[in-house]
Image 1 (cartoon, one colour):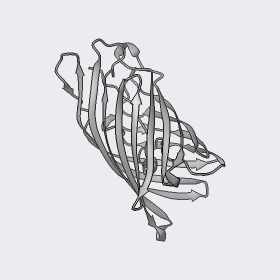
Image 2 (cartoon, one colour):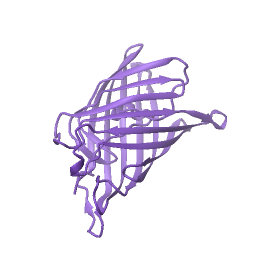
Image 3 (cartoon, rainbow, N blue to C red):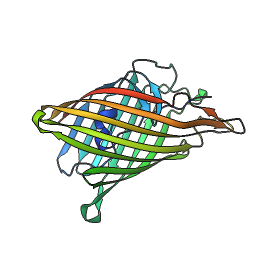
Amino acid sequence: MKCYRRCTAWSAALIALSCSPSLSASPETSEAVWTISPAITSNYVFRGVELAKTCFQPWVDYTSGSLSLGLWTSFALEDRVSGDTDPEIDLYGSYTYTVGGGSIDLVPGFYLYTYPDAETGNGNYSVTFEPSLAAVFTAGGIQFTPKVYYDFMLRGATFEISAAIAIPLESLGTELDFSVSAGTFKWTDVSNDTSPSVKNWGDYWTAGVAIPIQVTSRSKVTLAGLYSEGRNNFYKQGELPKVANDAAHGVTSVTLSYAISL
């Protein structure tokens, strides 16, 4: 049975952990800012599923006030499967609305996932579209982000909640960014042009820590570690028995990124 592969983004403190762009609250500034970030990660993990080993994942982001737009990419340097869904080139966007007297942000957004080398005849999608809606609020110094996604091609939803906190390291002039997240998903059509359709569902959780090091006023290097675990992940086609996804397991990854704002 064909596995469906792709990536997603981080919440506020997960920026360095997965080195992919976020649809969380944007900084309140009228200044337009471009951010460019090459990054390399030891493992490519999406919602508890290990997709590849070492990957190069550069991205570029444009932010102006509450608007954020960007392009995120991933190129497998190890375990690349010819004709599969690598490389990946994703367009994303979000807009932040502050409500409740400033106590909460609502963030509608979207991801447009594209796979230039995908062989659609083998069950791969060349394009999928996944809008999302997040709420961002802080309680007890911890930022919480419940979020829902819906993929129109895979025909299914993902529900996720994350929490993040930054611990200052004043003597070192930096901080430790801790984050955890947990989610569940169910898609009803994960294999392109297949009858009967193939379902995929599962649960996942992550825990990570990152340390950013300011290089200049507009650039920084970030070293991060992330543990991700997928559970109860199965495929099922028609009346056939369900099949466990053996790529859903516990994975520890290390990511190094460099970001510069223009």
